Length: 350
Ligand code: NAD
Image (cartoon, rainbow, N blue to C red; front, side, top):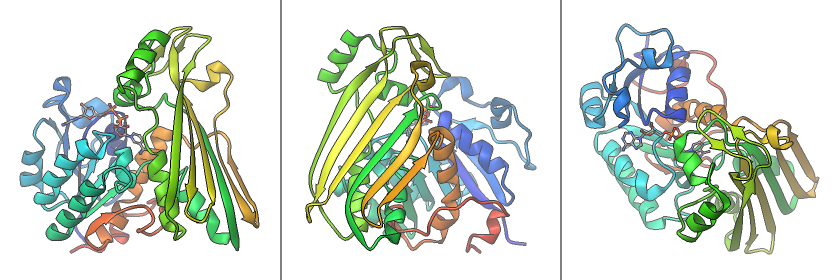
């Protein structure tokens, strides 16, 4: 019998804790460490926090220092769920590579880091190759619903004339990091002030998705523009991590238009808010690809963003471990699929 696949998680928030739950449910995984800076978690058992059974013959306590986990446990892979931006994830990825582990990051910009941080993307690629390890950025979006799915669907077309991609989703599953980035709970005046101070990012990932689609089709991006408007709620909305009083901001409506170098147009629409149903909004994922044959994909309701992100990060583990060293994106690796059997059947490891 092959040895178990050792996984550590850095960032035990909404995404990281969900990944731990999923790892614990799959045969052949061994959760060997969890790191989070939140002081109320320090020294506590992961299984106590998750209120779940421990499937291992050892406990896992939340630690403040990732280096102790890396040195003592030597994980095969670390799931990094702490950041949205490559510049913030970079020092952590560097540290992980220096300790000889593969990395999957949830940072939205890491889904296609060349889009906004080409120099850091190059450094990550060089470091990963030097240490013989693989780094992937992924998530539900960017990473899947507004890019990879459209790319895969284009595979059954003889001619592509344009893309119209919408994701109408709920922000409710996401943690405090996302609530802050989307301005959830702010008054309209606070929103305008924070927008001016560039303290609200809204959805991070349109440019990443556009550039991933361009590369996949053998094109280049020639122009890109995005807009963001606050979504003001007419009723009070409460989710696990967010609260917007009536008349306050419950999310943002984002749109982007990109042109590729052959003139092909990509339109993206992504209104995201907590508890959309309370505002009479029905969620869904829609991909229309103009061309021959025309493609019209609808998934109603949306692929749930929290579970979708948790799943894609865990399900990509075998592909990342099996890959050649370097920085990868979702178009470099085999297509995602669920891990249903023993993870050891899917991994080439000694
Ligand atoms: P969250 O706020 O619930 O969790 C983040 C956790 O990381 C917190 O527990 C925090 O204490 C911990 N943390 C932050 N910096 C740390 C550090 N230096 N050391 C140790 N712990 C640290 O956020 P979340 O909802 O779990 O999301 C995590 C990140 O993933 C966010 O930036 C979010 O935008 C991103 N994300 C991306 C996608 C996608 O589709 N690509 C989807 C979901 C989330």
